[in-house]
Image (cartoon, rainbow, N blue to C red; front, side):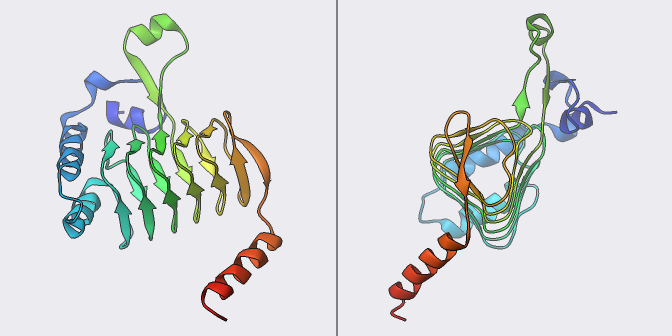
Length: 201
């Protein structure tokens, strides 16, 4: 098995031995190019972002500056928006569903290291994939740790650190993030009434 495939499958690997075809240098340079563009050049930003990530929907926008490790290990669904200063540390695969929103400074961190200091010091590391379901909203400054899955429709409050997977249809907050409550029909009715009022219905 190649060093790259060890990396993306959650096994121990050495970053120094990653094969040339899979090195992250071009992706990091492309992210830097995006970050240097004028914010008014939105079409060019989106074009380069679609080139940067492994797969995207037609409608996406990641507000620069943004930071990636590999870039091509991240797959993004349709109608995705991320605010300023987000990090996609995609040593292992990151999967993001449709209609997902990120606040500023959201960090998805797949990389991690052995607990044993001697093994860690010899340069071995590993990573665990992250999966974000459809219609998830991550508030400002949320950190998602390696191996976490977040279920559809779930909201994570600002500044939270998600250390364990979260089910669908909940609001979670804190460090470590804990479920505050479920999202239910009362929420839907409340916000649909506000929406109707906005449109003058």
